[in-house]
Length: 542
Image 1 (cartoon, helix red, strand yellow):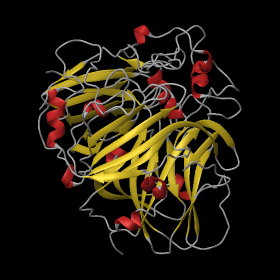
Image 2 (cartoon, rainbow, N blue to C red; image 1 turned 60 degrees about the vertical axis):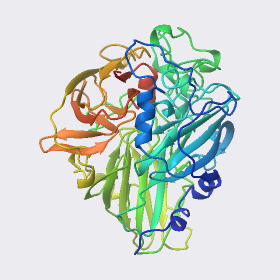
Image 3 (cartoon, rainbow, N blue to C red; image 1 turned 90 degrees about the vertical axis):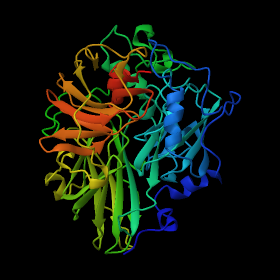
């Protein structure tokens, strides 16, 4: 057994495509400069978001100073294209939007300390952006349209450039409207140059719930089905060429023609999950995918019996939590949301949208199903672990016993000593209520829908205690941009995460250090909830 070399890791799924994106590697500094609109530079110096005065601008001197502290390693220059394409999901062809005509998009792989310089070419019929989910970066690279940058117009390019300081499992996705519920996502892996784990192979698995292009369905059409008749489509339901994430008070009261309801009804009624303490979701997805494949033609990972595998699981879905298990094996959890934890063995994991878990497994001899059950819904995703050369494939509906075994929740994980948040009393306490109903589909915070002029103030250097009180009958995976937080509990600071589930009529209490100046989104990662207004902004005071 050994620590995999770069060559070994590049044999992982997606790696060939990801490596092909690498255009150049230099040792220049990481501070971006302005340039013309096409092939635009990382920072548009003239962009200042609307809102109250006295807050740090996304490209302000405080942001640049924080970026300099992250250092400047080798520059990894990549290009990625967002385009409309036809995908084969395993015998089912759909028309959708992807990166580089593939699902998931190509792997982006770096080493902690590298400077990522990624140029996104927008060849879609409307605006888009790119968000590096979970990465603590400079604010103007965060990819939130109308808040940290202007959305990238159709036909234009934009270069995202920032130092990636922390190793971990992350992913890329659009941050405009419901585009993430198409195929606009890709894995982002940041290697640790001093990796302490020992393993032979790596297996990256991206899970997704899918409806785009199936019998005429589109994500925007499904949102129209969820909204009561006569209500607004939401603050980010923009037509072609418009920026998403506009102010809810400025939203158009009607969807553009392409956003009208189409296809069969995808509204899910009477879903229930004991693990999620109530309804599991509102969208009845026709397909669930693992690495872009349907269960009847699953992707296969091959290794030898006895190989120790690092399995990186990413929930790229938009409205579905997955209960994940590998038949015949236990999972040893090593990381959540990119940060290490004390190793914990479990039979299965419950993974909310945008959460990531790293686990170790030692491969037995045979063919084994990796099943991602759509929690509280009907259907599942499937991938296959194989150590022999046979052709037998587990049936699409296989249900390993491990799915009904022990499931370790995130709040029971203990952070590794290297990432424990220092013991400190909070300087600021912030309470935000999660509000809205299924009937009105009026999701928000404190009974208000998103407005880009909102600010919840913090100051650099503060320890902030954030209490999120779920006053709804639904569960929500809540995500904070630009930071990681520590789950709090009876034993003090818990696992470090950037996305965490808050159950209905429960509260989530987290601590984080305000060490990354800028304007940062806090939102539900149920894309249909955020698109309906469940987003707000934490702003650093100057």
